[in-house]
Image 1 (cartoon, one colour):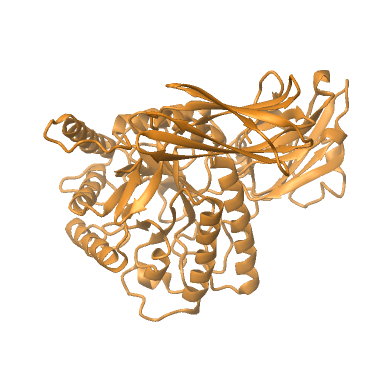
Image 2 (cartoon, helix red, strand yellow):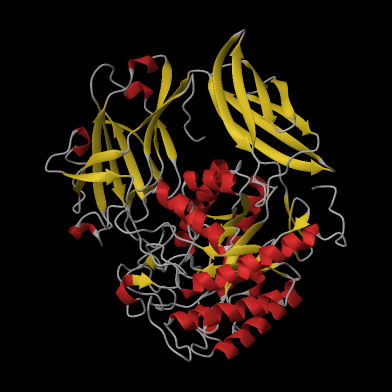
Length: 615
């Protein structure tokens, strides 16, 4: 659970200036650098290390972080944990020279019990070794034999089209909990008529205490006793005439769980709950029983200097721009975003498709490599759902982005996929298992994988909602806007006829260099980007089964260096990297805010159908 400061629990944010040292020859552990670093320089945490120094931009090997701190003496009777928000890609942590543990896979948090390593009334030293090498067996993979047919090959040699930022990219927090404490809380919401039901499951660790759970918000306050069996207790609240969470009204109830020893409160944890449901019915996506259409973007956590490091003001700015442009959603392409971003989405009513870092997956390099990636994907899925399960903003899980078979480039460029490859069947089993795991871990949300135009249709059939990335008019039929729109229409109609499921166009767009113009529109100009987006929106609005449009991308972002990426940047953003709007942003604002006004007018029309009883 996210560390929380209250009258019982404590947190100490270790963000700030750390000692830093590169270890290109992997000698640090052998030479016991975890007992103290020499010859260091100062680095900021949280932040990627790549843009903080000139010599670290393309360095992805091993490096060490260290800093000293005091542990407050008031924590003596509690358990102390060190929590790392994101260490990309592999980390090992030492506390006062003792190995506390490690973690594989960036963008997800891990916490280590350091209680027995704490020194009281004197400085404590934490040392963290981080390695970001690109390897075929990691997720996402890198330095593969052949990336997307060599299409995105650049430097560094990734199998994905964004920069492989590395380092301690989210806060490092020391926190304490009581010896007997609340270990986890899950809140699941359902709707019956006008009532909302909040199903609460709590787990405790360390003792056999009784507890209480209290739900508070509009309409009153509800309380229930928690009686634990094997460390687990459950309760259900019925909220009459519940105020449902939605983008138009992101109302949050307050849920507080306590553990009690007689009259004394031993532990307390509070979280915010949005009462809402998400479901797929036929070719509709339903929020609170009503059809919803996603408007928004694929995004990246990317900004100058700090790279992928947490920047809370930037999160606030981005959400303000999402509202300005008329968007209601985005996908966390192609990795989990910060917990702070999820929290703000809950408050702002932004709908999130939450994705693990499974981009660039392949199924043709041997059973051993495939299983290594599968094991890591399973861990990432478990960790992501455990982290984000209580966020009402999260409406779907994505298990992969653009997995591709051996013949992907032939399919991608319109050559068809008539020849079945062994990797298709292997990929089908891999993706089936991932989707089944996500459904098992959380049966309350739809699950999907994000396919690429021309990819195996049988893979798309596995999802609850079809997410498809389409680049007709750019990578295929470049410069031919009308022909690209025609190909898009054919693709969507064929997929819907075959699968009968709702479809989200999860990526579409064109690179536009800011300030480059032409009439008539030509590729790389702002006019061409607008005209491509216009055609995609027109094709989609004529097809009611298209329930979402996510433009690629929200803002320009850094990539590796290649002949296809001017200045080492992907320029498909409708905002520049520093969040200045291009023509495309103004075009989308005009279209999407007009749609919102039309929908609002329809809702007020006395001739409109009455609202559902779930509203």
